[in-house]
Image (cartoon, rainbow over all chains, first blue to last red; front, side, top):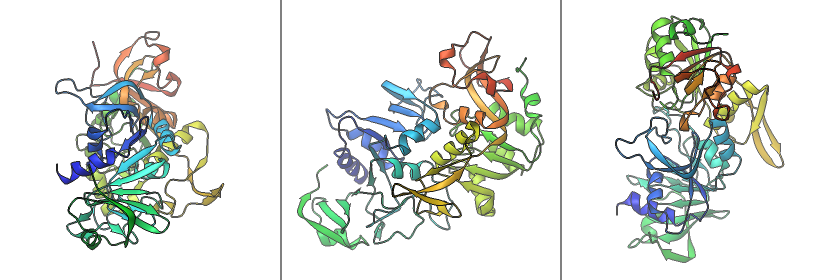
Length: 216
Length: 222
Protein backbone atom coordinates (compact mmCIF):
# COMPACT_ATOMS: atom_id res chain seq x y z
CA UNK A 1 0.00 0.00 0.00
CA UNK A 2 1.47 3.39 -0.98
CA UNK A 3 1.44 6.42 1.32
CA UNK A 4 -1.73 7.92 -0.15
CA UNK A 5 -3.73 4.72 0.19
CA UNK A 6 -2.35 4.14 3.70
CA UNK A 7 -3.59 7.62 4.69
CA UNK A 8 -6.97 7.07 3.02
CA UNK A 9 -7.47 3.70 4.73
CA UNK A 10 -6.75 5.23 8.16
CA UNK A 11 -9.05 8.21 7.51
CA UNK A 12 -11.89 5.85 6.57
CA UNK A 13 -11.86 4.49 10.15
CA UNK A 14 -13.00 7.92 11.36
CA UNK A 15 -16.32 7.59 9.54
CA UNK A 16 -19.48 6.58 11.35
CA UNK A 17 -22.54 4.80 10.01
CA UNK A 18 -24.98 7.36 8.61
CA UNK A 19 -22.43 10.15 8.09
CA UNK A 20 -22.88 12.68 5.29
CA UNK A 21 -19.36 13.09 3.92
CA UNK A 22 -17.74 15.45 1.43
CA UNK A 23 -14.42 14.31 -0.02
CA UNK A 24 -11.99 16.82 -1.52
CA UNK A 25 -10.27 16.25 -4.85
CA UNK A 26 -7.11 14.08 -4.94
CA UNK A 27 -6.08 11.86 -2.02
CA UNK A 28 -9.40 12.31 -0.13
CA UNK A 29 -11.36 10.65 -2.95
CA UNK A 30 -9.47 7.41 -2.16
CA UNK A 31 -11.19 7.29 1.25
CA UNK A 32 -14.36 5.99 -0.41
CA UNK A 33 -12.49 2.77 -1.28
CA UNK A 34 -11.82 1.95 2.38
CA UNK A 35 -15.11 2.60 4.16
CA UNK A 36 -15.36 -0.22 6.75
CA UNK A 37 -17.97 -2.93 6.31
CA UNK A 38 -21.23 -2.11 8.04
CA UNK A 39 -20.60 1.64 7.78
CA UNK A 40 -22.90 3.33 5.28
CA UNK A 41 -22.11 6.89 4.36
CA UNK A 42 -23.76 9.36 2.00
CA UNK A 43 -21.28 11.16 -0.23
CA UNK A 44 -22.11 14.79 -0.97
CA UNK A 45 -20.76 16.52 -4.09
CA UNK A 46 -20.67 20.32 -3.93
CA UNK A 47 -22.30 20.93 -7.33
CA UNK A 48 -25.48 19.19 -6.24
CA UNK A 49 -25.47 15.47 -5.40
CA UNK A 50 -26.18 13.46 -2.26
CA UNK A 51 -25.52 9.76 -2.71
CA UNK A 52 -22.72 9.96 -5.26
CA UNK A 53 -21.43 6.53 -6.35
CA UNK A 54 -18.41 5.12 -8.18
CA UNK A 55 -17.15 6.17 -11.61
CA UNK A 56 -19.36 5.22 -14.57
CA UNK A 57 -18.29 2.14 -16.53
CA UNK A 58 -16.82 2.83 -19.98
CA UNK A 59 -19.69 3.14 -22.45
CA UNK A 60 -22.20 3.95 -19.70
CA UNK A 61 -21.14 7.55 -19.07
CA UNK A 62 -23.92 10.11 -18.74
CA UNK A 63 -22.80 13.70 -19.48
CA UNK A 64 -25.42 14.98 -17.02
CA UNK A 65 -24.19 12.95 -14.04
CA UNK A 66 -20.64 13.79 -13.05
CA UNK A 67 -18.52 14.44 -9.99
CA UNK A 68 -17.11 17.77 -8.82
CA UNK A 69 -14.07 17.16 -11.02
CA UNK A 70 -16.32 16.87 -14.09
CA UNK A 71 -15.88 13.11 -14.54
CA UNK A 72 -18.89 10.85 -15.24
CA UNK A 73 -20.03 8.96 -12.16
CA UNK A 74 -23.00 6.92 -11.02
CA UNK A 75 -25.37 7.57 -8.16
CA UNK A 76 -26.51 5.07 -5.54
CA UNK A 77 -30.10 4.14 -4.67
CA UNK A 78 -31.52 6.93 -2.52
CA UNK A 79 -29.48 9.66 -4.22
CA UNK A 80 -30.76 13.17 -4.92
CA UNK A 81 -29.83 16.09 -7.17
CA UNK A 82 -30.23 19.80 -6.36
CA UNK A 83 -28.91 23.24 -7.34
CA UNK A 84 -25.79 24.97 -6.01
CA UNK A 85 -27.65 27.25 -3.57
CA UNK A 86 -29.25 24.19 -1.96
CA UNK A 87 -25.92 22.37 -2.00
CA UNK A 88 -24.23 25.15 -0.09
CA UNK A 89 -27.18 25.46 2.28
CA UNK A 90 -26.43 21.80 3.07
CA UNK A 91 -22.72 22.58 3.49
CA UNK A 92 -22.89 25.95 5.25
CA UNK A 93 -25.94 24.94 7.28
CA UNK A 94 -24.06 22.21 9.15
CA UNK A 95 -25.71 19.24 7.43
CA UNK A 96 -22.42 17.66 6.32
CA UNK A 97 -20.95 15.57 9.15
CA UNK A 98 -17.39 15.24 7.90
CA UNK A 99 -15.31 16.88 5.22
CA UNK A 100 -11.95 15.37 4.33
CA UNK A 101 -9.54 17.48 2.36
CA UNK A 102 -5.91 18.09 1.63
CA UNK A 103 -3.92 21.15 2.66
CA UNK A 104 -0.84 23.13 1.77
CA UNK A 105 -0.45 24.04 5.44
CA UNK A 106 -2.27 23.43 8.74
CA UNK A 107 -1.28 25.03 12.03
CA UNK A 108 -1.65 24.41 15.76
CA UNK A 109 -4.59 26.82 15.97
CA UNK A 110 -6.53 24.65 13.51
CA UNK A 111 -6.05 27.19 10.73
CA UNK A 112 -5.88 25.74 7.22
CA UNK A 113 -4.35 27.08 4.01
CA UNK A 114 -5.23 25.06 0.93
CA UNK A 115 -6.26 27.36 -1.91
CA UNK A 116 -3.41 29.59 -2.97
CA UNK A 117 0.36 29.76 -3.08
CA UNK A 118 1.48 33.39 -3.34
CA UNK A 119 3.23 34.10 -6.63
CA UNK A 120 1.79 31.01 -8.34
CA UNK A 121 -1.27 30.67 -10.57
CA UNK A 122 -4.39 30.91 -8.40
CA UNK A 123 -7.05 28.29 -9.17
CA UNK A 124 -9.61 29.81 -6.78
CA UNK A 125 -11.08 28.43 -3.59
CA UNK A 126 -14.09 26.71 -5.16
CA UNK A 127 -16.15 25.22 -2.34
CA UNK A 128 -13.25 24.70 0.10
CA UNK A 129 -13.92 27.74 2.30
CA UNK A 130 -17.60 26.89 2.64
CA UNK A 131 -16.84 23.24 3.42
CA UNK A 132 -14.32 23.79 6.18
CA UNK A 133 -16.50 26.41 7.85
CA UNK A 134 -19.78 24.49 7.48
CA UNK A 135 -18.94 20.83 8.06
CA UNK A 136 -19.29 19.55 11.63
CA UNK A 137 -15.85 17.89 11.47
CA UNK A 138 -12.87 18.79 9.30
CA UNK A 139 -10.18 16.15 8.79
CA UNK A 140 -7.04 17.04 6.88
CA UNK A 141 -5.65 14.04 4.98
CA UNK A 142 -2.30 14.75 3.36
CA UNK A 143 1.29 13.71 2.99
CA UNK A 144 3.15 14.92 6.07
CA UNK A 145 5.70 17.14 4.38
CA UNK A 146 6.71 18.42 0.97
CA UNK A 147 10.16 16.98 0.22
CA UNK A 148 11.22 17.57 3.83
CA UNK A 149 9.61 20.98 4.07
CA UNK A 150 6.99 20.98 6.87
CA UNK A 151 3.28 21.52 6.18
CA UNK A 152 2.16 21.21 9.81
CA UNK A 153 3.08 24.62 11.15
CA UNK A 154 3.16 26.73 14.27
CA UNK A 155 1.42 29.36 12.15
CA UNK A 156 0.35 29.11 8.51
CA UNK A 157 2.26 31.49 6.22
CA UNK A 158 0.05 30.99 3.14
CA UNK A 159 -3.31 32.78 2.74
CA UNK A 160 -5.87 31.00 4.92
CA UNK A 161 -8.89 29.03 3.81
CA UNK A 162 -10.43 29.32 7.28
CA UNK A 163 -9.53 30.01 10.90
CA UNK A 164 -9.59 27.42 13.69
CA UNK A 165 -11.61 24.72 11.94
CA UNK A 166 -9.32 21.66 11.73
CA UNK A 167 -9.60 19.15 14.56
CA UNK A 168 -7.65 16.20 13.14
CA UNK A 169 -4.71 15.65 10.79
CA UNK A 170 -3.92 12.24 9.31
CA UNK A 171 -0.70 11.70 7.37
CA UNK A 172 1.43 8.71 6.38
CA UNK A 173 3.53 9.41 9.49
CA UNK A 174 0.86 9.72 12.15
CA UNK A 175 -2.49 10.89 13.48
CA UNK A 176 -2.73 14.24 15.28
CA UNK A 177 -5.50 15.99 17.18
CA UNK A 178 -5.56 19.77 17.33
CA UNK A 179 -6.37 20.78 20.91
CA UNK A 180 -6.37 24.00 22.92
CA UNK A 181 -2.87 23.11 24.14
CA UNK A 182 -1.47 22.40 20.68
CA UNK A 183 -1.09 19.45 18.32
CA UNK A 184 -1.27 16.10 20.12
CA UNK A 185 0.32 13.11 18.40
CA UNK A 186 -2.01 10.17 19.13
CA UNK A 187 -0.74 7.59 16.64
CA UNK A 188 2.64 7.03 15.03
CA UNK A 189 3.19 5.01 11.85
CA UNK A 190 4.95 1.64 12.31
CA UNK A 191 8.75 1.88 12.46
CA UNK A 192 8.87 5.65 13.06
CA UNK A 193 10.17 7.52 16.10
CA UNK A 194 8.74 10.70 17.57
CA UNK A 195 12.00 12.44 16.67
CA UNK A 196 11.60 11.50 13.01
CA UNK A 197 8.09 12.93 12.73
CA UNK A 198 9.03 16.03 14.73
CA UNK A 199 11.97 16.66 12.36
CA UNK A 200 9.55 17.28 9.46
CA UNK A 201 6.95 19.16 11.55
CA UNK A 202 7.23 22.88 12.27
CA UNK A 203 4.77 22.88 15.20
CA UNK A 204 5.95 21.29 18.44
CA UNK A 205 4.13 17.98 18.80
CA UNK A 206 2.71 17.00 22.18
CA UNK A 207 3.04 13.23 22.50
CA UNK A 208 -0.08 11.60 23.89
CA UNK A 209 0.29 9.51 27.05
CA UNK A 210 -1.61 6.85 25.13
CA UNK A 211 0.43 6.97 21.91
CA UNK A 212 -0.53 4.06 19.66
CA UNK A 213 0.90 2.50 16.54
CA UNK A 214 -1.01 3.79 13.51
CA UNK A 215 -2.91 0.99 11.82
CA UNK A 216 -4.61 1.32 8.49
CA UNK B 1 -45.82 34.56 -27.25
CA UNK B 2 -43.11 32.74 -29.17
CA UNK B 3 -39.85 32.43 -27.26
CA UNK B 4 -38.29 29.96 -29.70
CA UNK B 5 -35.57 31.63 -31.72
CA UNK B 6 -32.13 31.11 -33.24
CA UNK B 7 -28.90 31.35 -31.26
CA UNK B 8 -27.78 34.35 -33.35
CA UNK B 9 -31.04 36.24 -32.81
CA UNK B 10 -31.00 35.46 -29.08
CA UNK B 11 -27.46 36.73 -28.48
CA UNK B 12 -28.05 39.88 -30.58
CA UNK B 13 -29.67 41.33 -27.44
CA UNK B 14 -26.28 41.28 -25.66
CA UNK B 15 -24.75 44.77 -25.62
CA UNK B 16 -21.29 46.21 -24.97
CA UNK B 17 -20.67 46.48 -21.23
CA UNK B 18 -23.26 43.88 -20.26
CA UNK B 19 -22.92 41.57 -17.29
CA UNK B 20 -23.63 37.99 -18.40
CA UNK B 21 -24.52 35.31 -15.87
CA UNK B 22 -23.50 31.90 -17.20
CA UNK B 23 -24.94 28.62 -15.86
CA UNK B 24 -22.90 25.45 -15.52
CA UNK B 25 -20.27 23.75 -13.41
CA UNK B 26 -17.22 22.98 -15.55
CA UNK B 27 -18.89 21.49 -18.67
CA UNK B 28 -22.00 20.17 -16.86
CA UNK B 29 -24.86 22.48 -17.78
CA UNK B 30 -22.57 24.86 -19.67
CA UNK B 31 -24.63 26.61 -22.41
CA UNK B 32 -22.10 25.91 -25.17
CA UNK B 33 -24.45 26.57 -28.11
CA UNK B 34 -25.13 30.06 -26.76
CA UNK B 35 -21.47 30.72 -25.92
CA UNK B 36 -20.57 29.69 -29.48
CA UNK B 37 -23.20 32.12 -30.80
CA UNK B 38 -21.73 34.83 -28.56
CA UNK B 39 -18.36 34.06 -30.15
CA UNK B 40 -19.50 33.89 -33.77
CA UNK B 41 -22.66 36.00 -34.08
CA UNK B 42 -22.10 38.79 -31.56
CA UNK B 43 -19.43 41.47 -31.33
CA UNK B 44 -20.42 42.62 -27.85
CA UNK B 45 -17.37 43.59 -25.85
CA UNK B 46 -16.35 44.96 -22.45
CA UNK B 47 -18.34 42.09 -20.98
CA UNK B 48 -18.46 41.02 -17.35
CA UNK B 49 -18.86 37.26 -16.96
CA UNK B 50 -20.30 35.72 -13.80
CA UNK B 51 -19.74 31.97 -13.73
CA UNK B 52 -18.74 29.35 -11.17
CA UNK B 53 -15.60 28.47 -13.14
CA UNK B 54 -15.70 30.10 -16.64
CA UNK B 55 -15.73 26.55 -18.06
CA UNK B 56 -12.81 24.40 -19.10
CA UNK B 57 -10.33 24.54 -21.98
CA UNK B 58 -13.06 22.78 -24.05
CA UNK B 59 -15.47 25.68 -23.64
CA UNK B 60 -15.98 28.34 -26.30
CA UNK B 61 -15.80 30.86 -23.45
CA UNK B 62 -12.02 30.64 -23.69
CA UNK B 63 -12.25 31.82 -27.34
CA UNK B 64 -14.52 34.74 -26.43
CA UNK B 65 -11.95 35.68 -23.79
CA UNK B 66 -9.06 35.35 -26.27
CA UNK B 67 -10.76 38.01 -28.40
CA UNK B 68 -10.39 40.37 -25.44
CA UNK B 69 -14.14 40.86 -25.13
CA UNK B 70 -14.33 39.86 -21.47
CA UNK B 71 -12.88 42.53 -19.20
CA UNK B 72 -14.15 41.33 -15.82
CA UNK B 73 -14.84 37.91 -14.29
CA UNK B 74 -16.63 36.93 -11.08
CA UNK B 75 -16.03 33.24 -10.29
CA UNK B 76 -15.21 30.69 -7.62
CA UNK B 77 -12.81 28.24 -9.28
CA UNK B 78 -10.79 29.13 -12.39
CA UNK B 79 -8.25 26.29 -12.43
CA UNK B 80 -9.79 24.67 -15.53
CA UNK B 81 -9.77 27.79 -17.74
CA UNK B 82 -6.18 28.97 -18.30
CA UNK B 83 -7.37 32.26 -19.88
CA UNK B 84 -9.07 33.35 -16.67
CA UNK B 85 -5.94 32.43 -14.73
CA UNK B 86 -3.90 34.59 -17.10
CA UNK B 87 -6.35 37.50 -16.71
CA UNK B 88 -5.87 37.34 -12.96
CA UNK B 89 -2.07 37.43 -13.36
CA UNK B 90 -2.16 40.31 -15.88
CA UNK B 91 -4.63 42.40 -13.89
CA UNK B 92 -5.59 41.18 -10.41
CA UNK B 93 -8.60 43.52 -10.36
CA UNK B 94 -10.09 41.90 -13.47
CA UNK B 95 -11.00 38.64 -11.68
CA UNK B 96 -12.88 38.51 -8.39
CA UNK B 97 -13.01 35.14 -6.64
CA UNK B 98 -15.67 34.14 -4.13
CA UNK B 99 -16.24 31.04 -2.05
CA UNK B 100 -18.58 28.92 -4.20
CA UNK B 101 -21.46 29.01 -1.72
CA UNK B 102 -21.12 32.78 -1.41
CA UNK B 103 -21.27 33.18 -5.19
CA UNK B 104 -24.35 30.94 -5.39
CA UNK B 105 -26.07 32.84 -2.58
CA UNK B 106 -25.19 36.26 -4.06
CA UNK B 107 -26.90 35.26 -7.29
CA UNK B 108 -29.80 33.55 -5.49
CA UNK B 109 -30.39 36.77 -3.54
CA UNK B 110 -30.12 38.82 -6.73
CA UNK B 111 -33.08 36.94 -8.14
CA UNK B 112 -35.02 36.80 -4.90
CA UNK B 113 -35.25 40.47 -3.95
CA UNK B 114 -32.73 40.19 -1.10
CA UNK B 115 -30.12 42.98 -0.99
CA UNK B 116 -27.42 41.28 1.09
CA UNK B 117 -26.72 38.53 3.59
CA UNK B 118 -24.28 37.60 6.38
CA UNK B 119 -22.16 34.47 5.95
CA UNK B 120 -19.50 32.94 8.24
CA UNK B 121 -17.48 31.82 5.21
CA UNK B 122 -14.31 33.81 4.61
CA UNK B 123 -13.95 35.26 8.13
CA UNK B 124 -10.25 35.58 8.95
CA UNK B 125 -9.19 35.19 5.30
CA UNK B 126 -8.40 37.70 2.53
CA UNK B 127 -12.05 37.39 1.47
CA UNK B 128 -13.06 39.63 4.37
CA UNK B 129 -11.04 42.62 3.09
CA UNK B 130 -13.29 45.66 2.80
CA UNK B 131 -16.41 43.84 3.99
CA UNK B 132 -18.51 44.62 7.05
CA UNK B 133 -18.00 42.06 9.81
CA UNK B 134 -20.69 41.53 12.44
CA UNK B 135 -21.20 39.08 15.28
CA UNK B 136 -24.45 37.18 15.82
CA UNK B 137 -24.70 34.96 18.91
CA UNK B 138 -20.95 35.26 19.41
CA UNK B 139 -19.98 34.13 15.90
CA UNK B 140 -18.57 36.44 13.25
CA UNK B 141 -20.09 36.85 9.80
CA UNK B 142 -19.27 38.85 6.66
CA UNK B 143 -21.77 41.01 4.81
CA UNK B 144 -22.05 39.93 1.16
CA UNK B 145 -24.25 41.78 -1.33
CA UNK B 146 -26.57 40.36 -3.98
CA UNK B 147 -25.50 40.08 -7.62
CA UNK B 148 -27.54 40.49 -10.81
CA UNK B 149 -26.85 40.51 -14.54
CA UNK B 150 -28.19 42.09 -17.69
CA UNK B 151 -28.33 38.71 -19.40
CA UNK B 152 -28.25 35.08 -18.29
CA UNK B 153 -27.42 32.13 -20.54
CA UNK B 154 -28.30 28.67 -19.27
CA UNK B 155 -28.75 25.10 -20.50
CA UNK B 156 -31.66 22.75 -19.90
CA UNK B 157 -32.15 19.10 -20.68
CA UNK B 158 -35.76 19.55 -21.81
CA UNK B 159 -37.75 22.77 -22.21
CA UNK B 160 -41.28 23.42 -23.39
CA UNK B 161 -42.04 26.32 -25.70
CA UNK B 162 -43.22 28.46 -22.77
CA UNK B 163 -39.66 28.18 -21.43
CA UNK B 164 -40.27 25.78 -18.55
CA UNK B 165 -36.92 24.05 -18.09
CA UNK B 166 -36.00 20.63 -16.73
CA UNK B 167 -32.33 20.50 -15.80
CA UNK B 168 -31.35 16.90 -15.23
CA UNK B 169 -28.90 15.34 -12.75
CA UNK B 170 -25.86 17.34 -11.79
CA UNK B 171 -26.49 19.95 -14.51
CA UNK B 172 -28.84 21.86 -12.19
CA UNK B 173 -25.97 23.56 -10.39
CA UNK B 174 -26.06 27.29 -11.21
CA UNK B 175 -28.58 27.30 -14.09
CA UNK B 176 -31.85 28.25 -12.42
CA UNK B 177 -30.06 30.59 -9.99
CA UNK B 178 -28.46 32.58 -12.81
CA UNK B 179 -31.70 32.71 -14.79
CA UNK B 180 -33.64 34.24 -11.90
CA UNK B 181 -31.09 37.03 -11.44
CA UNK B 182 -30.95 38.55 -14.94
CA UNK B 183 -33.10 40.96 -16.94
CA UNK B 184 -32.95 38.96 -20.17
CA UNK B 185 -32.68 35.18 -20.03
CA UNK B 186 -31.73 32.85 -22.87
CA UNK B 187 -32.08 29.11 -22.36
CA UNK B 188 -30.77 26.47 -24.72
CA UNK B 189 -32.43 23.08 -24.37
CA UNK B 190 -31.23 19.67 -25.52
CA UNK B 191 -34.82 18.82 -26.37
CA UNK B 192 -37.73 21.21 -26.96
CA UNK B 193 -41.33 20.03 -26.55
CA UNK B 194 -44.79 21.55 -26.94
CA UNK B 195 -46.45 23.31 -24.02
CA UNK B 196 -48.15 20.65 -21.91
CA UNK B 197 -45.65 17.92 -22.76
CA UNK B 198 -43.25 18.68 -19.91
CA UNK B 199 -44.45 17.28 -16.57
CA UNK B 200 -44.91 20.32 -14.24
CA UNK B 201 -43.42 18.19 -11.43
CA UNK B 202 -40.11 18.16 -13.32
CA UNK B 203 -39.77 21.92 -13.86
CA UNK B 204 -36.45 23.15 -12.43
CA UNK B 205 -36.88 26.70 -13.78
CA UNK B 206 -40.40 28.05 -14.41
CA UNK B 207 -40.93 29.46 -17.89
CA UNK B 208 -41.72 32.99 -16.69
CA UNK B 209 -37.99 33.50 -16.14
CA UNK B 210 -37.07 32.62 -19.73
CA UNK B 211 -37.24 35.23 -22.52
CA UNK B 212 -35.70 33.32 -25.40
CA UNK B 213 -35.38 29.60 -26.09
CA UNK B 214 -32.86 27.99 -28.44
CA UNK B 215 -32.30 24.40 -29.59
CA UNK B 216 -28.97 23.18 -28.17
CA UNK B 217 -26.53 21.54 -30.59
CA UNK B 218 -26.09 18.93 -27.86
CA UNK B 219 -29.34 17.05 -28.39
CA UNK B 220 -31.10 14.74 -25.93
CA UNK B 221 -33.22 11.69 -26.72
CA UNK B 222 -35.23 11.18 -29.91
